[in-house]
Length: 533
Image: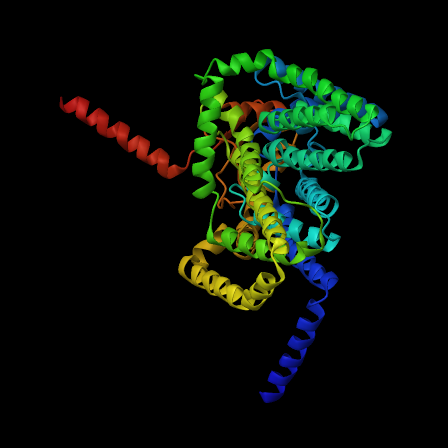
């Protein structure tokens, strides 16, 4: 036993020594982050299309089936555009989203549905990583290693505590329009920030920015509106700034001017008016006011837990140490808080204005990402501001603070430990973690059973000789995979969409016998009562 203890102590000492180097603790954080994604990616192999995946994919699937060879590509693209046009006239003007949703990879075959999670997590990671790398490394001047750690902390909080995981990384239609475009928006903001730092935009970057501008203008309205605010602010800052050249001024103006008609094409769609007629919308000023109040309530209730608090405190202390070598001024921290909070609020406005509330878990997902970015950004900014205040102190005060640092850190450590012990419920909090939920579904066998049952259904769906499909309810509903299937009503819009998608006459879920018996018993009771009367 003593030998085991000595070996463990030796290896632990080596690990701590290895971890002291900045590049090594970055590697460790990266390894932990990648490991946390493995269960999510593994679960994707049990995933299947659901809900509006079929509705949006009807035209593209038929174009794929009805064409051969190279003719498939233009036919499928044309079908995707036609889906956007149809939606633009009938329901919603978000044309770029409609095209991407219609180009779901699994229209080729349901067997490659897993690719969608890889794409969504890949876009998410790339967008968040690049945004953090630009802001922390290129703008603030911290090392790439510090930027990597910051990115991993932010992404881990966003992924592991996302309110609706199925609508973030598994259900293509709901995920790509919100989480996907939010990630693209972060990459776009990173490119803009880096361009302002360089005070120039290369031709290649300008082309990329223009494409992203159109993509976001035709995307979901929360990200589109925030993009509009950012492009307007950028144009005003560049046009008013003396340090920017004429070319940069023209380019910044061009981005905003390209965005306006692209966004107007989405915003003024006839489908929006038809959809709006179903709801009583608010006035613009009321929507803005309600967005501030509701977002503040959400930020401190549903979007907050003790793990997030502890992570933000840890990030603050880490940046307080790491920002010592940077030259960024970190002026006006209260103004920074107000502006960064207002950016989160902007994403609330479309939902609060149009339908008076936030509809759909996928919408809440991006609002949650915004809250995490708000807390992380303010932790970094206030750490930098406090660092600059410390540097302004005299030698005696600095020496006093250095001597008191261990006591201060100890007090913070005790506070965090007490908070963690007091507030963390291991069982309940574990169930909230996305990776734990994925592991639970696979370890308990729920994902495997669900996968086999849906595969049996899909064999019927894809059999051209079977025109009428009746299926049983699935045994399990894995939290990250299940987002609705066929219903018991043959006239349900979801059932009709699947009929058109798979070219069937009739598709329905079988009514369970228990429910049928209950209904029959109720009818018999009613008949008996009527007879006695």
